[in-house]
Length: 251
Image (cartoon, rainbow, N blue to C red):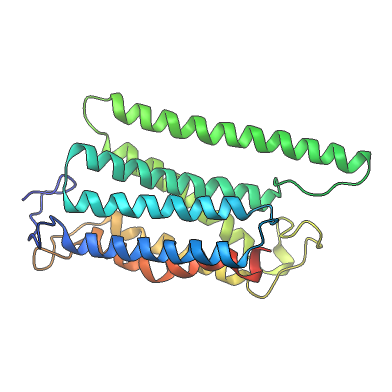
């Protein structure tokens, strides 16, 4: 069987066309599912970012489900569902990160000056949400109407979103003297919690793992290729990353 992504052949196992990628996709899905459970259990319903964190986890669960389906049965429809779901998960990660970094979520106000600031945040929130929705719909529409799926454009789109997302978390983890923004709305700009480094570490590991998507090689034993190894490399720390909001660090 020839995989649509490459010219390499893979050994089937229980009907699965890329069994290693299926197994590692399900591992990633399980990590996001556990993270969602922790978010629901540990973050109060009143937390302004709780719904965003949960949506992020659910977007990841959806993406990894379709990844497993695609690698089980490589068809044009399952391929698009895999790629579009992955793009949605990455886009939403960038979306909620900007909201978190710029504190665009609703906050209690007192006085006309603070109310004016809240109105500005609300306007920025609506504008940012509209932009992300428009970009995602345009991305899906563009790839859907083309006579042939543009793999190069799809990869570039996801890379751009992923790099932007990772860069924000790397900036979040910078040392106190070079803090570029206020990490918490009611703390000074120089305040840097001791656990801030974790965000930068996760971002750096994710960026490094992406190299496996760019440099392919023939599958070892017709089973384990670069793409499968990418899924394998993200599984261990994606579990910690999805659980990150449920700790003290983003409260």
